[in-house]
Length: 291
Image (tube, rainbow, N blue to C red; front, side, top):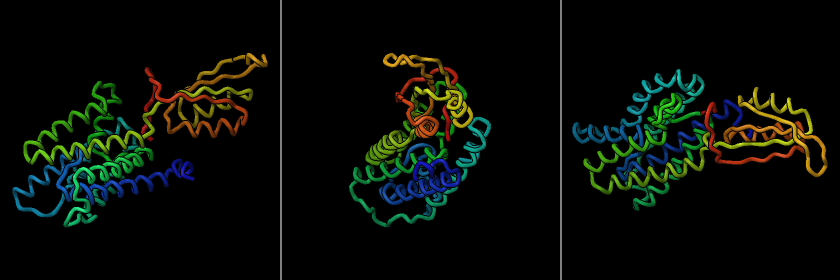
C-alpha cells in the first residue's frame, strides 16, 4: 500500500505536506524552546529573528515567514535547472512548512530539559520528516536548492559541500553571538538530522540491476526507457548448465526506482533472475532524479 501511495502524484504531495508538519512540530517542540538553531537557510532566518527580537524588542517569532520570503528568489533561480514539477512541489512544501512553523505553539517551558535528549529527538523527527519529503520528489526549500543547482550545472561545489560550508559559517556566528552551548548543541541537532536523513533518502543511492530473462527482452527495455526514463543495455548469454540462450539486461538507476523495476520484470517474467548491487559509482551521462 505504501509503495502504491508513493507512486500516486497526489498522495505524494499529501505525504510531503505531512512530512513538513512533522518537521515544523519537531522544531517548535524540541529545538526552539531551548533557543537552538537549525542548519541552512532556516537557521539563518532564526538567527536574524533572534537579532531583531533582541534589538527591537519584538516578541513574535517571524522566522517561518522570513524563511518563505527568502525561498522565493531561490526557487525562481531553480526553475530552469531543476524543472517545473520539482519546483511546484517545493513551493507547496515550503509554504506548508512556513505555515506550520508559524502556527504550532512553542511550549513556554521545554518539553525535554536535557539538551542532548532534545537534540536527539528533534534531529530524528526532522530527519525522518525531511526524508519523507525528498522521497516524495519535493524539498522543503532552503539552501539545498542552491546546492542542487550548482551540482546539476556541473559545479564541484556539491550539495553536501555547499551545506557544510554554509553551516560552518552559521554556527561560527552562533558561537560568537551566543553561548558556546547554543552553538555546540545546534551542531549536534543538525548532525542527528543529517544522519537520519541520509538513511531515509533513497533517490541519491545508485544501484545497478542485471536482469536475466528468457522472455522478450525488448518489453523490459521499453519499460525501463519509457516508464523510468533510464538507458538500458542488453546482450545474449548462454546458461552454463543448460546451454540454453538467455537475455541479459543491465541498467543503473536510483534505489527508489528499483522496486518499480522489480514489479514490472516479474509481471513480464515471473521466472526472471535479477541481481542488484547498491552504492555503485556512476560517471558520465547519468541523471540524478529529484522525484
